[in-house]
Image 1 (cartoon, one colour):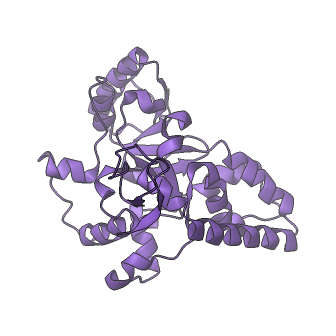
Image 2 (tube, rainbow, N blue to C red; image 1 turned 120 degrees about the vertical axis):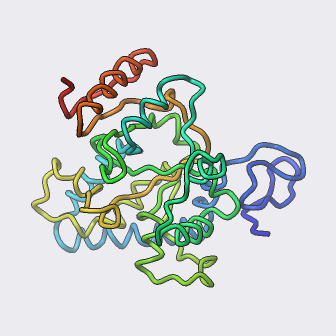
Length: 290
């Protein structure tokens, strides 16, 4: 049993994966948030963060790093999905945003069947032991734009709807293990200092990206430094957001339609715009709807 702390009500140990105390049933903090709050995680992250600020100071761009940090306070979680998926989600308050595992177990989709399926099982099982099926994924963004390799429609989430149940991670968790050649037998010993609670997401971003800054870095380039899209999803560079639990259209702040590939897309986008009006979610069309 992995234990983080003790129940504040009954004083007994609580497994990391528990959503509530198994002894007295008192609801607890979300498991991914509790994992990010562990002392060893916070100490390791603070060490990385302070070292990154020292490097910026030694290279004479401390003010740029501070400006970047300030900008990051307004960052938001963005999910990229197809127009069809976005339209389904906003069609009713009864529609939920399901996880990959929920869709497979519900019999409404098949596994991808590629090399990433087994790697995903290991990486997500290591980060979220016994609760990976309840975690939704997003990318941290400064301008509301997401990763179009995952879909042409960007769903921007309201901070106050996810802050209490969200954590952030250095990068795509599968790629994190792949790049570091972390073996399956070592998956239970992931290095500390690469994840944080939503309130400390700035530290992960600065620790990861301070070396991408320089004395001449302009503020308008910050969004592209935080989130950079590659030719494929494997080439994307971003800070991953982990959100525990369900989401509906009411979780959204706004929607950005990034591109329209066909006449059918134009029809769906027009319908999406009308549906969003009913739930008071704004929409921005980066592509014209004929």
